[in-house]
Amino acid sequence: MINFLSRPWPWYVAGALIGLTVPTLLILGNKAFGISSSLRHICAACLPGNIDFFKYDWRRESWNLWFVGGIAVGGLVAGTLLKNPEPVVIAPQTVQALQELGVRDFTTGLLPGDIFNWGNLFTATGLLFFVIGGFLVGFGTRYAGGCTSGHAIMGLSNLQWPSLVATISFMVGGFAMTHFGLPVLMRLIGL
Image 1 (cartoon, rainbow, N blue to C red):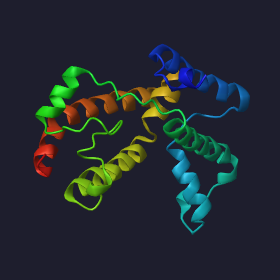
Image 2 (cartoon, rainbow, N blue to C red; image 1 turned 90 degrees about the horizontal axis):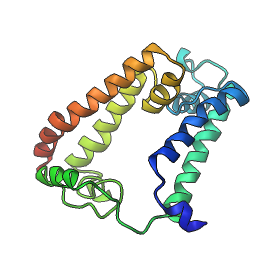
Image 3 (cartoon, rainbow, N blue to C red; image 1 turned 90 degrees about the vertical axis):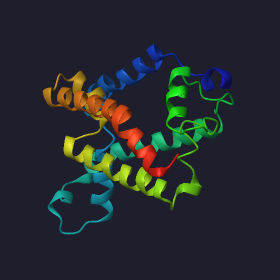
Image 4 (spheres, rainbow, N blue to C red; image 1 turned 120 degrees about the vertical axis):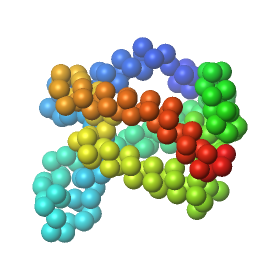
């Protein structure tokens, strides 16, 4: 069983399971799938100040916090007990493209060790990729009214026009960042 769970699952199995969460949540509890709104619920619960944005009954959405907590626990279990000992499989073309940008460490997991390691936390690399990058992801999520999973999984399955626009924008932004922005950033940090 452990061997079965620790192997990479085919995309058509994992994708179908993720896709089934949308109708399951809607049918069982009339709940909308989404992750990014959980930060708002946490802030509303922990910072009950006089801020209009946080004045709502966050307890009605507490199921979302359990869902996010389950993801965190699941990630911990998957990363420790079910960890695949094999190196992450990366397409040779991707490895070559990243090596041309200066990335050499592909052995540390899902993220390139040249950039994402504790030693870079208080360096220009950490400031650029951890702090500024994290801020931009949060800003973009708030500006778009949801994250990629909320729009692409929940919004598209409900045939919502704003989610289609947001998903297309996420994809275009990702391609532009990969091909135009990342080379500039890699030159800035000197990899």
